Length: 174
Image (cartoon, rainbow, N blue to C red; front, side):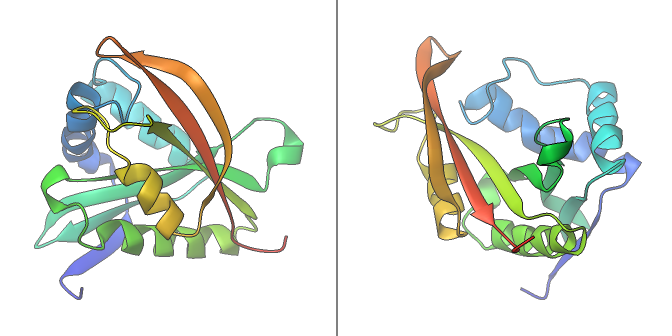
């Protein structure tokens, strides 16, 4: 996958990242947001995250094809070694190894920061529907995450209830 380059996010990436994210907000239950944020709001989210944690983009031929970031799981000090992760890949480029590359670089950087645990929340339903598949859950499981909690019927989108599965991956001994 030598055509791909992973780099740190830049301020001018916000509009393209928002285009990728907006698909998931408007067409799927992957995100529990109902409306896509504005570019300004998205820029603020990036600034808040990058003040402390890595936020990475993957490019191919100069265009952004996906992104991943880690954020604070909780503001309480005892959780300082645990982060929550999020990853989004252009819908038409899923299942091509982009997410795996992004997570590999994110994990390396987080280990260098002394992070021990990664948490990922995945929307879930027993029976896949037109708004939600098991792709996120399956991707995280294949990436070494395991399910540690399931919150039932906590998100309602498109008139349907969805669960939230929390998955965890330990990346260092701490």
